[in-house]
Image 1: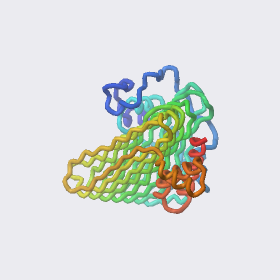
Image 2 (image 1 turned 30 degrees about the horizontal axis):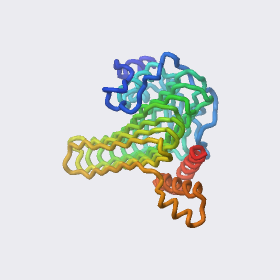
Image 3 (image 1 turned 180 degrees about the horizontal axis):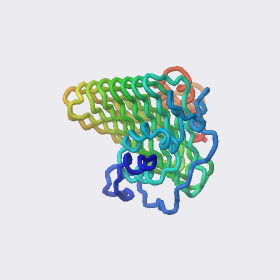
Image 4 (image 1 turned 90 degrees about the vertical axis):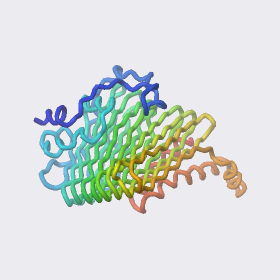
Length: 394
């Protein structure tokens, strides 16, 4: 019964080919001609408890979660399919949109975690999921399914890293369901090695009067593309999305975001900031979509990129698709080098050129940190960004 839920009832079966660089919308900036997936057979993640980018104090570790019939469930997804098919079967594979990498994940996934919070349950401790790509030359297909029922509250940290420094592939799926009047803080981060292909299909559906605060950090990877979508499906729902990436060498990071307003009186706020150094390149393509009938939508998106060097490159492409007439939708995008006038001003105050440049970069990325209230999340995000900044500026 469990296997039928996973492979037949819930997962859309689609037949698609590996996306091509030309002629396939969304893939124009990320060519896959150098990717031969047959050379990267599927293999599981590292077993046991492992270190990652974050270690929030007092966290509930996903691998140690107990399977219970009452209260929150934090458990390996495959085990949850067997013991909690009533929860998993309603949502597994139904949230994320079909596509080549989503289908490959559905067919070959080896690792995954279920976080389920019943109605009106508040989880005080943060929940930590750590997934480590352990075997070089393989593909890790992993999944996260988070379900909050009506009135539930939780904070989930979901991180992916590497246990080696060789070429590999990571293909992740994240499905999030936030029920009526529920509240979820979700921090997703990847700090894999810089020889690994990274692909992701991530989508959240937010119900009536619910709130989602979503953070995404991309510090590793050689190449790849992540689709990140939030659908405001219930009246009065809110989604805040904060993203940061910092690249160097020849890294390529590609984010495709969608803020879909499918109900009236909904609010979305998305802000990405990127630091691009060396010969690396980044892409952010964002779309605000307001469905017919989604009146009184309030949506904002911005992507700002700072280039360090003449060979760094960034593309920022905002977009609007509006089918309602009572809305407020705004967007902004910027790509710039460090302002020489700012450097001159700081140097005139006695700072060295390198110190002046670092202060400007810290101020640029600090705008992301300012989106968080004082507390453990803000501190952890600031420390992670500071650590990555040290690597990029080394």
